[in-house]
Each structure stands twice: as structure tokens, then as C-alpha cells.
Image (cartoon, rainbow, N blue to C red):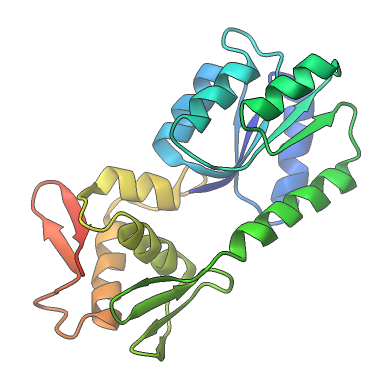
Length: 221
């Protein structure tokens, strides 16, 4: 999954912002139109959306509305439109912040870090004897720590969050490895194998991470 999706049709500004954020360690996906942004979001997801309003075709308000119909991903509007009505419209549609251009990059990055810190401070995610600590990305089984990589953690989290639902291989790979990845889709199969070895009582006969042949994987309690 991409950390930050930037929706900005000004190529120079988008490039500068992308460079700054990647220097901070974030994975970034840029889009220069609302339509492209929604296509990227639907396929890869994002932990944060930085959204301009004045876009060719579908404007930023429409993008915000569409994302909010099915997702609570934080959205920060970055725009030169400073009218009170525009600000109110952005907040009503579900934007988490409305920042006027030109903005101070240091303040923007501080706000972004604050959003990620708050998101990571959510409660633990548990199912049976498996518990994920979302703040420090650790896993325990029956109260005992299980050593997992960051990708294994994301994969386990996505499976548990969608318990009982079959998630296709393409969806899992795209959401977890994303646009910045140079990995091959087969890496998903390898990570599933590693996870089973770490959390299943019998990795050869898994009770939690089930293979749905020809489709993908499903988590069961």
C-alpha cells in the first residue's frame, strides 16, 4: 500500500512535494487528475491523500466525496482556493484538513507526521490468540512475541481485517507492495508461507490462512 497519494496537476509542485516526502521515508504515488487518483486509490490504496481542488476533469471535491463513500483514509486538501464556502465544502465532504497554498513544507510535513502518529495509536487488532499492535507493528501469539517483517505485518493485518472474505492475489500484492515495488507477484506466495510457519500450529494444514484455489487467500478464526 502506498503511504501518500498526491493529487496535483502542477507537475513542478507535485515533483517537489514527492521528492520531499520520499526523503522523509514515505512511499509516494503522484496523480495529475482526479480520475487517475481514484484508479490508483482503488487498485493500491493509500494511508493519506494530499488533494488539490482545481484539477482537469473531475475536481478535488468530487474525488474527496468518492473516497469518503467507502473509506476513512485521511485526506488533506492543499489548494489556492481560500473562499469560506470552499473550506466548508471540503470539511463537510470529509477532508481532515484544508491547507492554503502557498504552504510551508516543514509545517505540512509536521502535519503529515501527526496524522500518521495518530493513526498508529489505534487499538490493537486481535483474532483468537493472535494480536497485532498497530502502534509498533508487533505480533503476539498466545501472549508470546512473533517476529515478523513489515510486509508480513501488513499482510497479516489485511487478512484479519477482512476475516472470512477471500482476497485475491492481485489485490493483496497491489495493496501491500504497491506502485513503488520492484517485487514479483510470487513474493506474495513466499510471504504467506513464512506467515504460516510463524503463526499456524501446523503450517502444512493451516487453520487461519486458507488458500482459495484459483483466487487468493482467506483468514478464518
